[in-house]
Image 1: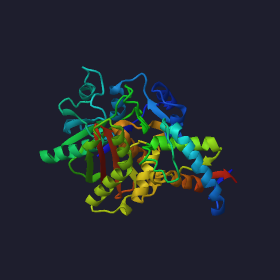
Image 2 (image 1 turned 30 degrees about the vertical axis):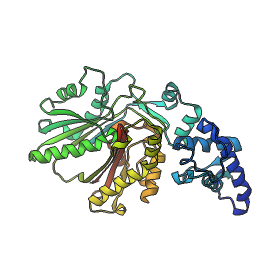
Image 3 (image 1 turned 180 degrees about the vertical axis):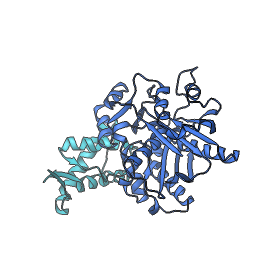
Image 4 (image 1 turned 90 degrees about the vertical axis):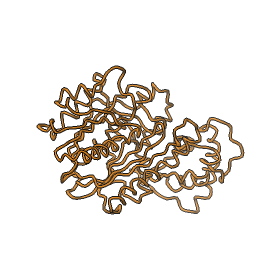
Length: 98
Length: 305
């Protein structure tokens, strides 16, 4: 049986950092080109030109890379604003074994 | 107004067209997981006449009223739906005793052309001033080219058809308003414009729904149901978030099992809503669709059951 939970703020600090690093590492793969100097503040759709489909591929790649399962029910366009906002969404929407 | 829908029995997993069109496993996974697409309806042994016949033969409201039909409109996503020189709609009209009617295609709003055709039919009948006059709006196409099998990054087309009988007046279902928002600036293949289209899609469609509802003198609270085009689940979830409208009241049942049935979606979904008892007498509902091709059209109409 699975249940959704929101990670407590204390645990989020380390997790968010790990998510930001992994998203940055995956960007060249989903964009199909070199990406240098990406940080939590990098605008995904604005500065990098990430399409919504590539954004969804990024979330799936993230799941595979970190062996996580992410609930996408509430995933909206706004969550793809920056690397950091996507990391925040993922951190708050992890599905885990209850 | 009477509405019939038809979906052929055969289903094909989206992996099949995706494989032929060169999509990666990850792209297919995105379609399944996020877009909520799974299978598309197909009639491998039939042509366009067979699809349209499937809908027409279920349109009980037409029987005995064929002589009243003044117009037959075929709403099309694509301008070309059969190879030259076939005219399947003309042939079907002869077959169904509608040979006397004026027959023409309605397009250029892509997948929103079905709603445009209903509005056009009502306007023509209203101008004629004949209270007995009827118009028949047909929709449905074959997924017979690569372009007619997939909307890149968005959806897969399914085969099916709908038939809708329109009268200038009557008790139900009654058209209260129609709104359409046309964007010629998207008539380009430029990548940055495609991104802009994705960016505005949900807000533009939501804005058109809201405009149609306001034009009907209503608020979203009064809308019992939205009958959508079957583009995908995620786009409609985004529209619902923008409108503050509950997503469970959008009839998305056929997205996973039939795919995006060109201009016929909203009418097929009408039949689904009727079968599920979701349409209540006197309650307003919305039919909405967005069409993208050469430019974009966002359209919505409010009707009451």
